[in-house]
Each structure stands twice: as structure tokens, then as C-alpha cells.
Length: 340
Image: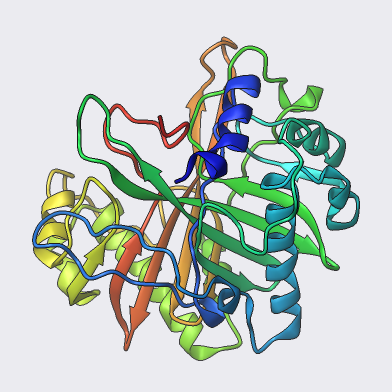
């Protein structure tokens, strides 16, 4: 990440104590750029060579929704043109980041510290993928991490989820896991609104799609999660993963053996009919599926209160097998933002 690209976010991080978003390049109709796995360990997250292709969709409404997210980002987040938010955001814009106040007015105030410049053609850092389904858009962005105390630099993925109403952004979740400080208002005082999701049998409705292939891809991810990740049966990974599986979690390793090793320490449990964590959304387009879940934590400065964060996992599926995975994980001791 160049100094020029990082500056707005570093300014936000230092001025507002924010954890901010990264970016990555994306391919058409929900396909993502891929990287060959290294000899050992995780593969780097790579940007797409043609980010604008990621905004295409056979469904014009999905293409419009992707473009609204993309234009907001490059105009406001990158270039400080907060007036654009009046056209692209609903007045009652709902914010689920654990660090940001809710509402369009608060959004404009937060990003008013970004130095105003000409609006770039592309978002920065680069886009990895843009996935749209129904009224939801998932934007995955490349996050470059320097590695601390002399460690090797590495990459991870930052995610944003938006709900769109009639071409305007109405709601936002992102993958920042940083706890709110005492200066962040509570939800009832205009602070971040709680992340909510569905549990139990209600999760099955999120797997539905008019496209049978997308429904099958969602189900594949759902079943992998229940059997392997929740229930600890890493031996069942062969049912779901391709032999050339590529892992982008910087703490994991590519290949089925690497995947099994990563989850081998989890105790075996009975396989449940649903995912343990509340599910916020399951978004599928092209060969990609994003699984979005809620996490709840004790509030560090408000005794008896909790705060919520959003976790993202993105999978690429080819011929009924999972071939690639991204999530927002950082190495132990690192935070996904600021990167230095």
C-alpha cells in the first residue's frame, strides 16, 4: 500500500480511533482473482487485474448495487467528497461497525477528515471481489500487513457488506474486530447498532436461490461449516475441498492437509443441523459464496454490556468442490488496522 493510499485511513485511525477497511480487485459476476499456493503456508491475497469487471452482472439491479458501493468508496472514503453521501446513502443509514456512529450525518462527519482530492477511477487499496445477491453487496479488499518485530509482511482480506435500497446504501457491516473504546456511544445513543443474525432452522432460508447452482454452492459451504468447523470433524474435509485448495488465511496453509491441520485441535462434537453462530447473510454470485456471521463480546469499558462484530468467510467453488478461501484473519498480535 502506498503512503498516499494509506493516508486517509491512517488519519481516520489516529484521529477517530477507527479500524478501517482495505480493498482488493475483483472479476466479473462474482468471480475472484486467484493466486497459486506457495510451497507451504497460505497464499497471498491478490488484486484483480480488471477491477471494473467485478461490477458487471447479468442482472442490471445487481450491477447498479455494486456500482453504488464502488462509487461511494472511491468518492467518499478515498477522496473525501462527503457530499456524495447525500445521493448514495439513506438518511437513516444503519452502521454495524463496532467503532462508528450510525446514520448518514455521522458518516459524513467521520469521513470529513479525509483530505479532499480528485475522485479516482478505482478504489484503493485494490478490490479482490464484489458479490451481489438480492439487496446485498459484499466487497472484499486487499489488506497488506507489514509483519511486526521484523516478521515477514503478509496479506489478508478486509470485507464490507452493504444492504441497498433503490440504489442507495441503507446498511453496513464490516470485518473490523477492534473493541469500541469508552468514547464510542452506545447503540441507544447513536452508536453502532448491534449485529444480528438468524439461528437454527431459520438459517436454511438463507441458502435459497432461484439459481440451482448458487443454492448448491451455498449448501456446500453451510455443510462444510457445520461438519468440519463447528463439529471439529476435519477428516470430512475431503468431501468438500478440492485437492488444490488455496488458503488465504495468513495463519493457515493451502492444501487439504493444511486445512485439516488447522482444525485438528478442535474437539469433535455432534454435527448440528445449523451453524452455531448466528448467520447475518449468505451471499452467492458466480463461483463465490460469502458466509457472514455475528460474534458477541463483553464490552471492555461498559460493565455488563456487550458489543458485536461481523465475521466474513469467502469461498470459491468449482464443479461442486471448494477450491479457495479468504477471511479477515491477522497473525497473532496484529490488528487488521492500522497496518503499521
